[in-house]
Every structure is written in structure tokens, then in C-alpha cells.
Length: 403
Image 1 (cartoon, rainbow, N blue to C red):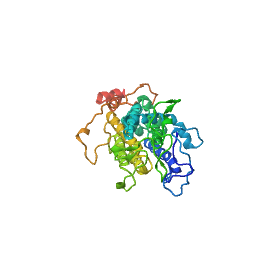
Image 2 (image 1 turned 90 degrees about the vertical axis):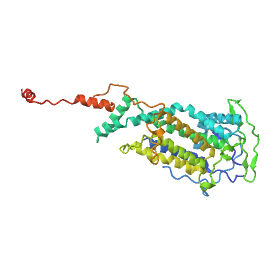
Image 3 (image 1 turned 180 degrees about the vertical axis):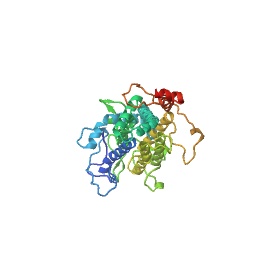
Image 4 (image 1 turned 135 degrees about the horizontal axis):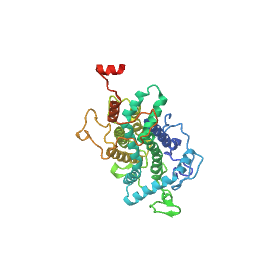
């Protein structure tokens, strides 16, 4: 994706990231992807960035931020594969920074642009999840009807999905597709905000879109540790001067995590609870139980790795999560967010979303012989009443039957 400054020629900086830093984002993204897939339907422990067993990296010359080239190294190959998207996001981020002069606000604006572009995709995900929840009563009925016959049950479920125009996989696909985007944003923030000259990355097809006041040669802001001063000012004043390009932990949290990570985790819990249906003690749907179990895993991942991920990535994820919460509120409402510790606010009682998802009506009335008719509960009751033969009573009826 890029080549960035890491060390001086002949000297390895004391804060030089080892092989863990190169592989850590892939491990985290892979773990999040596995959690997302499991929630819809082994990674070993990640090595510590400060492990003494890590091999010393070989010295590399300091270079400006330039597009990556194909490489046999898996990390290098992924970097080259995602270079066009990386360059597009970085150009937009650099443009916001050039206009505003605050990298924190620039990350916020970039996140909002990304989420606006992905609104249709995430809307499809929310609508699909809500339709699946609405179909749960009929799916349970099919489970009772074909109990013990898994093959016929799966065939009946697929027929129900086809007739209702519901694709179960469409609700999980956006969760998996956002993993590469998370990895690219990690690279944009970590490498794009630590390089001394980013202007080569702002050149597209030999056209320099704009330039930033970057030095042509590296300038050390910490000569003792050989730390290069980045072209972009990465400190965020409205976040108490946090460096968005470097990992950040708070001493008040024992130096293990940060308030950004905790805030991100709490917002993820809110967003996850809103996607689940309202709590029902009689609901024994296995997929819902799995989603509730996975509710806490993603937030824990982001809290634990606060010391390894740049603070700017948490700014991105917090804004993205808030955007998702608003979108979910408009489409599916509060979900199972309330009651919270036994308390349900008045605004959440009988709340109707602004753009509610309609019950998935049949889109195709023709169905194979023997397949169950997927109707609403009222239609099923009416159909059952029509199929019941009235009992004939009286002596006349019995004489008629004897004849």
C-alpha cells in the first residue's frame, strides 16, 4: 500500500515495530471477521508488541509515502492489492486536513463520507436482519412440522425464503466486507500520519492534485530515538492532544487501554443490542442466542488492543458506530436495547421506527405440491377454519350416513 519511514540507514530506532506490528492488524481483522461470521450463522494468542523473542528488523532507508508494488510477502501483496482504495481514502483525508488543519476533524469527516457511501449496503443488511426476525414464528412452525427430518426442514425453509424474497446471507455480507475497509483505514492512519513526505501519494496518473508543506528530507523530532517528524500534525487538540497516528493508553486505566477504546466498546454494545429483537423469554432461536453471546467479544477485542492500534483508528470507529446507531434507530428502532437494568424510558415504549420494515409478504404464490403455505398468523387461522369439516349431529344425519 505504501512505503513509509521506519528507521535511519544503519541505525534501528528503539521504537522500531517488529514483525508483530506488521502482522497484528491482519490478526485483529481476521479475528473480527471470524466473530462476525459466527454471529451470523482459531486464532492463537497474538504476540505482544514488546516481546523480547521478536527478531530485530533489518534496517530500511527512510522513504516518502509512495504506492506499494507487488510483493511475494502476503502483507506486501495485500498492501499492493488495496493501494487504489488506500490512495483514494488518503487523498480525501489529506484534503480535509489541508482545508481544516485538524487531523481529528479530518478523520471524522472522512468517516462520515464513507458511511454515507455505504448507506445502501448497511440498509440492506438491517432490512434483511429485520425480515429474518419477522419470519421467526413461521420458521419455528416449520421446525415443529418437520421435526426429525432435517432435509425436508431445510427445503421448506429455503422455499419460504424464496417466496418471501428474503436472502439470509445478505445480512452477514456487509459485516464481512467491512473488514478490508478496517484494515485499509488502519494503514491510512498508521502509515499516512507518520510519514515525513506524503505528497507522492497525492499524485494520480502523474497529476499532482495538491500538495502539503512537507519537507523533502526527513526531520527528526526526537534525535535520541531517531523518530521522524511527520508531515501532518497528528495531535488532536480537542482530545487533550492525543496523537492520532500512534497507540494511546491512559494512565488512569492502568496503562492498559484508553478512554477512546472504552467509548468505542460501549457504543458497539449499544449498536449490537439494537440489532437484536426485543427480549423474549420464550424465544429459543439459536441464531439469536449466538448473536447475544457474541455481543461482548468485539468490544473486548478493541479494548484489549488499545496499546497496539493507533488512536485515530478509534476515532474512525467511534464515529462510524454512532452513524450506524442513528441508521439503525431510523430503520429497526431500539431493538433489545431496553429494558436496561429493568428500566424502560417513556420514549422507547411502543416506539415505531421512522422507516419501519414491512412484514415480508409472499412474492410468488406458486409453490410445489406439499410445500407449506407461508402465511401470516391470521391467514393460517382462517385457513385452518376452512379446512375443518363441521360435525353432523342428529338422528337424520346418522340415518343418512347408514344409507
